[in-house]
Image: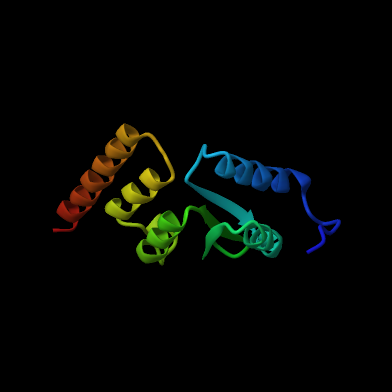
Length: 125
């Protein structure tokens, strides 16, 4: 696919940097949120390089493009089938861990989400 004139070079630089980091082993998996108009280009680039990916809608104009090691992408395919803002605390924790986020921060985030859900349930009761 040719890069057309309406492509934003900054968006493509982010994609290229993510691919570079993945190929160098800095990341096992990447989450790249991108405008739908860049999706075909991004997917073609990943496919050409033999990198596994999974696409999930992120609203009207954007998509979440996960890419990386086969094991990670297979797990994301099984785990996530809804918008990211609708993930359970457990799904959110697993996703953050797969993306390489700090485990202690993920633990704090998980506990905060579980506590918030508990408070909402008490308020409804």
